[in-house]
Length: 560
Image (cartoon, rainbow, N blue to C red; front, side, top):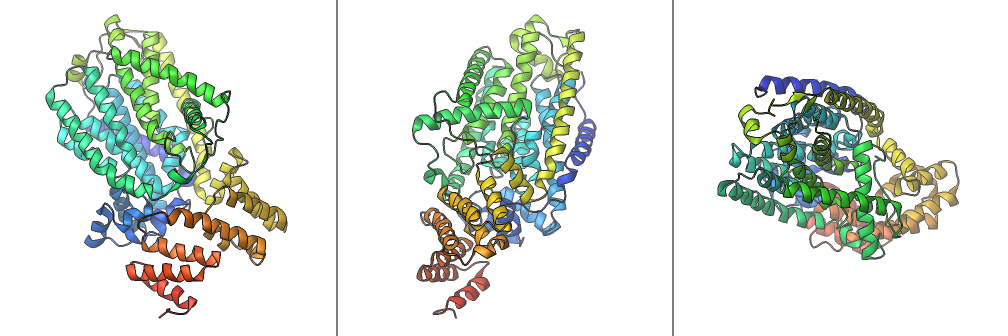
């Protein structure tokens, strides 16, 4: 079978891009939402694209990385280029994400093909990834450009490794500098080398280079991310056992989301598994035990299936809540996990039935090895044709196409959520009625209806839960009628205190952070600390000098 040509891949990308643009059409003119404001709209570090600003973006412990709490200079550089092209108009940002997502889906199909999946099955798997509803968040949310870029670049690294290992190491570095989650590619490559059983010192040495690249990228990323403070201050789990149960339960939830698309939502807030009889913990335990058993068995047999189970586990591990996040789950984390689950499920299904989704019954030798022979695959650029046709395989291919259609319809119904923050919060509230988003919506609704006591009760519950977005609360016109009340001022001060308690623990602050710290102290009634924060911000210098002088002047005593 001839290797697909560059024209073939280009036409496939064009087809995928056209389909993706239709699916994501409702979100293409959506506004900047949540983290988009910090990463793009209000990020002064990316609004000027000259050599000093580019060097500042790449500085490992510089203000640009500390401001976003991530060392991801390739991601910020991409946004800087977008800002020059699109400015504050969001349409171009959304289209960029969609077109890149189509490219990632093509690369994933190419990787499936390279690992022994027949062409039509690789095409269906790529299409499934393209339209999967769990990927809507990663594609429709502007600042998640980093997720799409990181997966695409890491796929290029895996595809280039055999023929151009130096280029593959460069792709890996670019992927890690877009999002550190691209580290999944390292155990995947190690598994591939083991499964093929023909790797020599050269291949293993290049794997060592990959590990060194990761180490170089990981240190500044850890320092930047640790500044968020949430990982060390959250008290979601009463003990280690509850945390472990919750981690396993989260794994079970991701499995359901991946294979059914049920349960997807923005801003996930699943309750912790406090009981040993928690159903998600029990389901996750059974599912992960089965996955672990299958991984060990196929890895010992050097079957390609093992590579993809290892992929899924490696992608899940960093987001498993070993280090707790404010929101313990996110659809966008599935973007890295999903390809591993898809590949593992395909090979497991093909092995169990002796039929691949291409419509062929595999030979006994192929079943033993997990797929067509490596020799035939390397010679042709795809799987061997040494097999008899089996009508049953076409039925599985049709089932894959039907599932793609169902997923596409579900994805299309989800994309309008990303038109505005209000829609996103409403969707989260519908999924988690006792979560942060739901309480926020109820507080605003009560305030609009004039029910002050109910609005204050919801806001107080948010503050008690650690909510620290005090600026959103104090600047929302809906709460203007409450602003003069003692209860509202106490709640706002509590939220500001929540923010300061995290920020104060950081060893270094950037100018925008010091300005926000000054605002927090003003709300808390500590004008001396506010003045000190302004003076530190002015002494530090930065993009907000004019604003700092103006606000410091309003406090008096040193405003000049």
